[in-house]
Length: 389
Image (tube, rainbow, N blue to C red; front, side):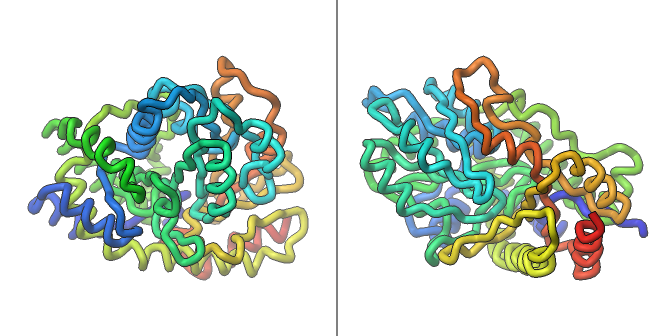
């Protein structure tokens, strides 16, 4: 079988990528389309999701003496580096390993007069409860900032995540729901933030032509490599996309390129179809694995409409994880540990208490691919591997 499923993929179609090269236009058109589709506020395209979050934090800290940003202790390291780049102090809050939500007791304890913002992450495309968290943050005088980088197109209570609060962000990076080879967006719903965000984004330079050309080449290559046959070939020749250390990734303060905006404008209408395919696989895995022992699935709350960017599973026995990943590899599935450490372990120089929930997730998590290249037979083979544990 000359096919291997990548951990995640967001196929755009080579015709859309080529068309974007020929019809690069103004990013404002893409931003208007994003705003119309997601919440009706304002959308501002920037270099990456990390840059989007940094600009948000720099905006809301202006004239505010608070310095602390509460971050879930199991999440992307970019949350920490963006907070530090904004001149603020990350505060790690443990998570409930069964839901990936903030541990409520810990959050209550951490919120205070020094809290500027709480970062609310919809990890793996699973929308997490937002209204109660917004009220809790507001009562402490803090701003709830939504991170929908892995959940663009998911909904909570019928509304798109990323636009449920005053301000939020999403990403167009590799492996995200809508991948443009990089890029991010700031969603602004409250009028009080629009002038400041618009001013900051307008002051950013456009990427240089050479960098834009490199982005297009990377996107075209990914379009080929993320397909099952292309990924199979890539892994045989050790051409898999390098993960590296996310703390060291560069994120220049720039706008979204006009090329990415043009491709995004063509690709945006296909996002619902891609997410529907992911959701179908996620629902099939949920139904098939529900009765398998030694596993814990993370059910989406009733108000959530998930997109299942990845399908997360917690193993009761972390010692079997490497063996399980190896078995999945033999059937042509590259599953993932996702983030192998809790955030305090990535940043040991930052003050933090123990975060046992986040550490448990880091030790026991496996994520399965759900992208549109996953077929019903692939789901059956994955379920068989877990059933034979």
